[in-house]
Each structure stands twice: as C-alpha cells, then as structure tokens.
Amino acid sequence: MTADPPLPPGATPGPPTEGPGTDRPPPRTPLAHLPTPAVPADRLAAALGLPEGSLWIKHDDLTGIAGGGNKVRKLEFLASAALAEGADTLVTGGGRQSNHVRLTAAVANRLGLAATVVLASDPPERPTGNVVLDEVLGPELVWAGDLGYYALEDAIAATADRLAGEGRQPYRIHVGGASAVGALGYLHAAAELDAQVPGEPLVVVADGSGGTHAGLVAGFGDHARVLGVDVGTRPDLDDAVPAMAAATAALAGRPAPAGDVQVDHDRVGPGYGAPSDACREALDLAARHEAALLDPVYTGKGLAGLVAAVRDGRIDGTRPTVFLHTGGLPALFSPRYADWVRRP
Image 1 (tube, rainbow, N blue to C red):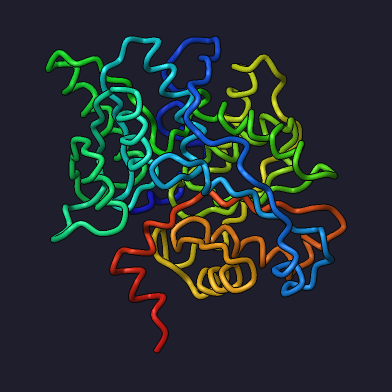
Image 2 (cartoon, rainbow, N blue to C red):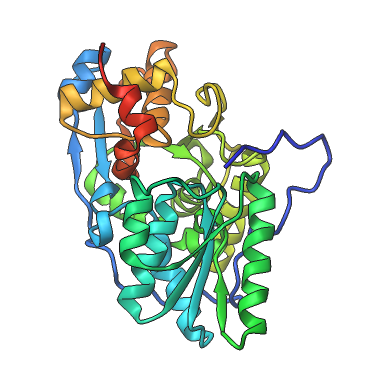
C-alpha cells in the first residue's frame, strides 16, 4: 500500500468519513476484553528524563480476539451496525500486513458472518506475518496491487458492489474502520482511560486512518488531549480527524470537540510501512525498559513521536502522558521487518 500524495489546498478529502448506518448510534456488540490495562511506564520515563508516575502505557494490544489490537473496539460498533442492517458479509481492506483486515476477518468468524478483504498489494510468494493469520481465519482475499489510500477505498466499494450483484448483503467498512460509527469505540475508551489514569492525561497515538484519534477527542471533548503521530497512511489527516471527531460526537449526542487537531507529521520516515531509525530506537526503548513489543508500521512510529515531543519540550512530565499501544505484533514476523530488527 502506498501513501497518496498530499491533497492540494481546497481539495475535497475523498470519500465521506461517516460510515454506513443511521443517525443514531448502533449498540455495542461485546467482543473485546475490557477494560484493557493502563500501567505506569516508570522505567521508560526515567530513560527519557521524565518524573516517576508521569508516563503510562494503555495496552489496547490486549483486547483479546485473534491477537488483539485497537480495531476490535471499532468493530464492536461496526459489526453491530452490520447485523442491524441484515448484512451477511463484512467488506474492508488495508495494506498487506493490515491488522484491521485480520481483526475484521476474526470478528466476522465470531459472529457467523463472511468476510471479503481487499489487500493493497500483489500476493506474496508465501504468506508471512498477518497474511498467515488471514489465511488461517479464511476470509476471501482480493489482491488489488499497489494502491494509495483513496484508490483502496474505491476498490473496497467496487468489491462490495460485486458482492451485492452476486446476491450477497455486504456491509462496507472503511480502511481502518475510520468512520463515525467505528470511532464510537474510542469515544467510549476515553472514559475508560480517564478512570484509570488521573489528571486528564495527554494521549499519544499512532495515526493511520485517523479513527482512533477522532474517537478519543470526541470522547474527551478536547483536541488538546490527543497527539496523533502520522505514520503515512492517509494524506488528509488534518482535515479527516476533526471532521470524523465532530461526526462521532454528533452521533453520540455530544458537541464537537474544542480546539485544534494535533498531528505530528515528522515521524513518517521513508514512507508508510517503511521503518526509520527513530522507529527502531522507539522499539528498543519500549522492549528493553517496559517489555512492551511495538511494531515498525504503527506503534514504533507512534512512540517515536512521543520521544521527540519529550526531547523538544512539548512533553515535560508536568501532566500525565499515556502512550496508546494499538497492537500490531504480527508484522514483526514478516521477513521485511525481521531482517530490519536483526543486529549485525
């Protein structure tokens, strides 16, 4: 999956961020193991020069189903909407090593639905990482070649249309579950997090398609509570996140979040899915100080953004900071990244 080029000023940011459904929120279909733990990261804090008790990790890598990850929270609402609409097939897509694809297939299996997933890649010679798990879970895999973000959205829509023409009842889910319906999962997670960590902490999260970021700020009611770290997935995060956050808040009967969106665009490195030296440092810091295993696509770059914010003074330990661990471990077992982490 390639990143789209930045949109020109005034351009429309692609398909609407509101997902399928009605103007009333669907009920939650319980799938995740909640609440996920939030734990102090005092050894990592000390390594970064922060005071004890100022840095936490919220472990949404431990949501439980099929290897866990943040997408399960979104799928609790998306799958509920699909069931309410009488769907028999979940349709979505992502990059070759997509965590969202893996978890959508798993949720479909748990609920007795079919799944068709579009992968923005050519088929590999042999499955590795998440693709192994995709094969085990058994969705229909559609290999669409190297596509940018919105070209992939178009391919997902075309696949849903094809299934409908075959007499199926597909429910289309945007890349990463990024819609107002999906982001409800993180609107509710915001309250869970605030009950665990005192002091209205700043949350730092890897920003792929933007739904997790949007849901959190919709839940907190304030953009200043979340720093998203762009990993190079989506070209219009600065527009998409606040629009999705406002739509999510409206769906839940809340006002739009206050303030301006916060996205760090300087940790993308060579591109989406291409790890950087800062990402490698972040993986080492998390593993060796907190035994937290990050991935080189999302969470490694997310923590690299937190480290950079500490070093330039934006995070100084005067308020609590929470790093949201969104999962992604299977990617480490693909040859591309296995070779990258190997030491000489």
